[in-house]
Length: 339
View 1 (cartoon, rainbow, N blue to C red):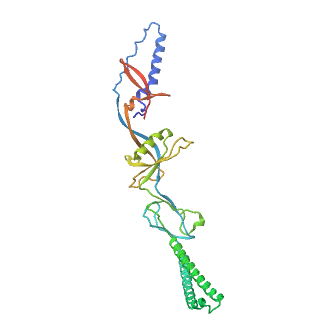
View 2: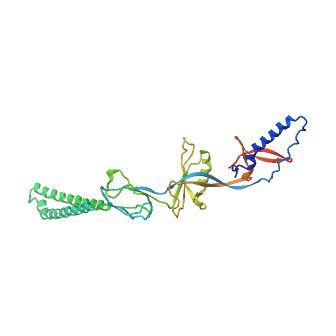
View 3: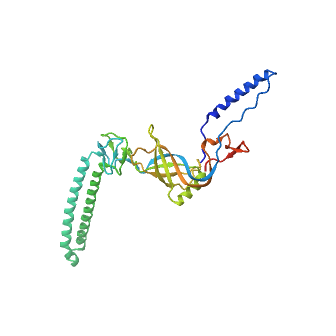
């Protein structure tokens, strides 16, 4: 693979060498008796033999990490926030309690719904007994049709009220359960957005906290459209490995290996790029969502590519080039760097 070489001492010293040479020529020009300066001796340079070989097709892109799952914690019932059960920024388990909303009103609602259900059960029981006692009379015509119809309607009404009361009790119990707000999955909980004592609920449109997963992690990046064919070909062949480099500050960088799990189906016409995403393990949780990290994508093998050291490649304003040796003389040769 060819990369742009770092500036060398020779390249940076060239303008000064040129100025010194011009100054020497100017001084020499003032003395007509001075002989012409001798020609500059040839510059010594090392030469290597470039060889063709198969090399990995690895391309690097800037990426941004994101959580596999991310959710805003909200209140599902209206009430005053009574307690917070987590340390901000800590890891929490799935199902762990995060907040508690004042429960007394909801416990009272459960008791009230239970009482209405018991009343409905009694009424439905009486209606069934009335129906059973009068059914032979209604069928035989011993009582009027209107009286029998009233008994049938009263029984049906009592059964309906019983079903409604049972549903009301179930809703009251569910609402009571919503007063304990739990983590829907394991992850890292962020800072709280609301303090204890505030009124919260669906109508407040206020998030309580944010929960994200950290293991595994995803990274998204945007290769240029010209790379789409190579990505799709590799994606079709099977797993496409990636390596994410984690900057650890003073410590050595870490390399986390994963695989591409999405090559988007459209190119963004405003940037001429296509979204790509990879998933990789992050067992220590040291890499957080929203972190910049370079990602190296291995798309396959490049066959019979000429390989030279980075230091042998130069660039001007238009081209990358190398110096080749022919008949003992250096000759410039423009090259295409990369894949």
